[in-house]
Image 1 (cartoon, rainbow, N blue to C red):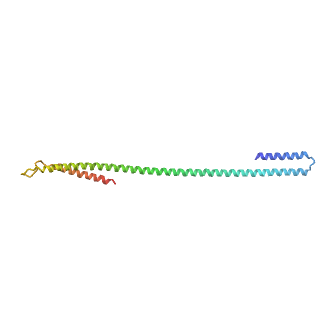
Image 2 (cartoon, rainbow, N blue to C red):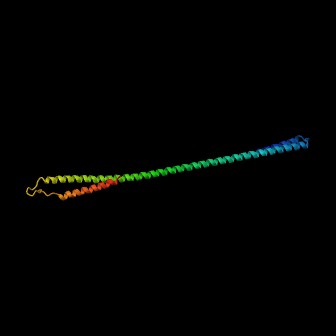
Length: 182
């Protein structure tokens, strides 16, 4: 812009100088008219330069505002995305915690069922032993003393009572274990 003004000023000076040297006979009024015209052109050039500078400043200001708005929008979008990611991570962590709790519960239930199965298996074995003992005791009744009516071999009443008590105890344990699992 300064370069344009300088060129315009130089052009006017050359024009003024050339006009003055070619015609010495021009009157003062012509010189004054030329000087006024040169001053008017210079004023117009300065006004045009100021207007152009004002337009350029306004364009620069608008561009700066636009750039600031774009940066602000980008920052808002980045913040929104960060919040979405944080929310997604929180949901995933909650789901992981729920699954871990469910796994722990399932493991406890499986352990209780294994214990109940072991107790029930032991109860079956004890019941089979009781059945075998009762069958052996039944055979003792086949050989009785004809005079007294008692069995020749002594009955294992203590063993039978022991097996019965063990079965009752195992049933209670199995019931407690199976009722503890949902």
